[in-house]
Length: 440
Ligand code: GDP
Ligand code: MG
Image 1: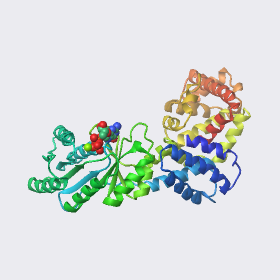
Image 2: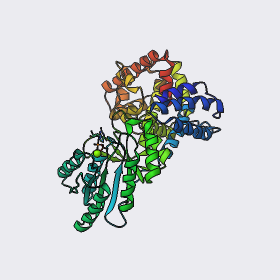
Image 3: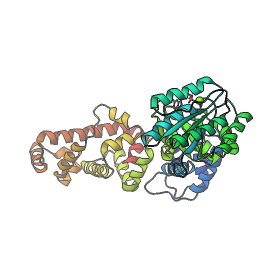
């Protein structure tokens, strides 16, 4: 995981005011590795890293973020930017019917995407018309006919003995006649780029004024995707990209490469074989996926907003010296409350599940937190700094003062002692403590 790796690189950076060239170079080696592991094209990864280095250099190290987190943040911002910023829709306005052509290699998912698009447009109240223009395999026409009948969307009666360009002309006339407003043209693919295929697509482009030419690419193909996308774009002036098979293990590196090389927006992602498995592309989600860091960024942003790093360092020191009092416990509860729901926060922290599985670890619970706070507040400062002096009589008064019961007061004291024990166990492992410190 890139986040962990960068933390390692930046451990030695504590105390430095700015990010230096040397530190960044080291971090960028890790970033480059992560990109390559996510199937980002070699050249694209190098250009990206150069751009990020330039940006990171000389930036002041924020008090609230560790240097590693800061670099991750810059990398993430840059990735989102490169992937196109915000989501972009297909063009459906202008003269009707609009014409959308799907192009790409065989098996990339053109026919499936044609069906998915038809379903989505139909549900928005449009009247799509599916046009099979893959005349080399009878099965290809049939595949689209099957999808059409499942979706109850009309399919142009193409035959294998006609030329794709003629099919498209006829289909356009038919659509005008029957008032269909969106032609979705499914084309033939090859296993590799081929001039005749490209010529055929150019013929269609000239004959029918295409509103959109969507290049369909399999997200799992990795490095190859770049050359293919580049060639299609140079020959056809594509207007957008559909990345299929983005569910499961695909890490999204192809998205970055294709976007970078063509400069065209990614408009949709396919996330399964089902006809509703088509989503608008979200650059930020894909960026997180490429970095393999889940929601860590959201967490960093929340932490940045509320947690004072110096306060965190103070607590960490206390933890190390085993001086974590009920007073500090109360402070921590305040911090947690500022950051939003406890469950939500814990679910975002990598490794926290391990911690929660530890026997006797206090389980988080919003209501309990409020009660715990009330109970600790009903103690005197002296008691908060030394819980051992709280006797039976005081427990009764604390319960009364906080509107709880003696049993509940006992439970808080018990869970606090358990926590001390747990922290003691963790003290030998510096990673565990610094992990907690960073995030609280
Ligand atoms: P075409 O040759 O470009 O028309 O590709 P097809 O539409 O026939 O799809 C090839 C294979 O990929 C089929 O088995 C599809 O079910 C599958 N497929 C298409 N899109 C997706 C997707 O987003 N996710 C997954 N898992 N499979 C997909
Ligand atoms: Mg097909």
